[in-house]
Image (cartoon, rainbow over all chains, first blue to last red; front, side):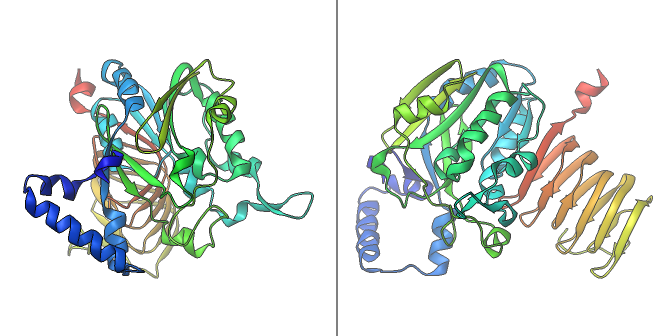
Length: 258
Length: 116
């Protein structure tokens, strides 16, 4: 994992033990290889595990909130106590809205002209992202477009454009094609100016009971598509500028300015 | 504050209230409340079974259950891991446990700033 840019908190502690670490990781991987399915306890522990990663996009974005006063920030990921703490401690105002979970609302499902089940984007935007125009200085979009239902992506990005201030910045992450369809959806906690902790998202029980949407797998969200550079440029074509950062862990970071 | 302490005003699981709730003592709500809650200078706890749809004014607010509405706490707000909160929070200090769901705005009012 470390060679792909990830490092677990547990692994960091063990690194100092030298040989002991190498032996234990070899035996763990050996056992994992033979385990066809993991126990619920193991799965839960894996979900709670946090991976640390460097983020160049975050590094560039964080310079703004270190210097500016009383910014208005919108976090579109799963509720992150550390993000809320980080911004409120600096005197900024933070709004938290978990759009991915909101998209699992079964009431959003409707039929299109061919009778196929689709999500009603108008209803979705009537209930979510309801803010005055040009309200936010920063929007943390994280990996939302990769996991959001196809019919919601463009309308949501359009709404994000309108609620972002001119000159405001939006940070989004996209998987590259090498990531694979089983790439887990993560929640992002900011732990440093350019450092994130990633935690696998487990769907809340309510969302699972409701049957969730087409974009979910049993206990989490499924990668819906892989955007290439041209798709991303097209998605954010109304914005003033776009900057790409290609990371080693099959993630393309994008920082856009309205 | 996982269970109600003695000396608290308590609303049990089966209690349903619609309207304005006000008082001058700490309160523990494990039932349903629809309306508004005014406990200025006192603490409110929404228990794990609590379902509150109300605007809240209190000194401290602890949420373990469901809350739809804005919270104004003069001192502290705590969202426990089972909390599901939709609404804006204005307070001096906030703590949110891992696993809590929150949709809304957090506005921190600091006393040192307010007194200047």
